[in-house]
Length: 139
Image (cartoon, rainbow, N blue to C red; front, side):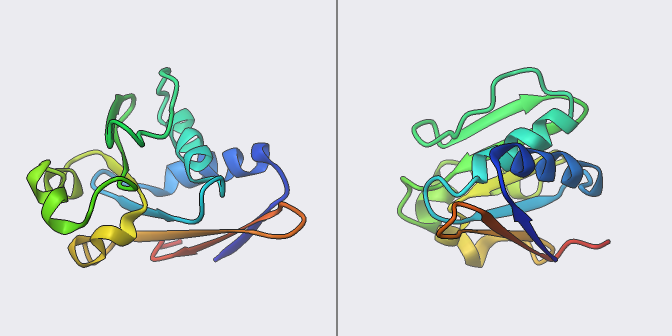
């Protein structure tokens, strides 16, 4: 599935519309360059889950946990070196938890991701539109 976002609001709405399609235990890989909209999608999903806290990219904390209608685990793996470091921090537990897990920069742990991971790739076009490609999501 491909979606073209023309604004931050459309990217946020994409996340909100994605929310109902996610179930407990869903793992979402958010892949794209800096500023491509990964955290905006996370904010949209959080809105759907009735999470009232501000959603920020957990670049320095690596993991943020939020409580709403379901738990939301938001990871940013930009600063980790790979699978070994991810295992040491206990990240693997979040891959098989009851909540919804969003992982920015998941390329660093590709071989650890569950088979049913949903992959969302974001690309910034010259006109600043975002091309959002989704793989692994059942309709």
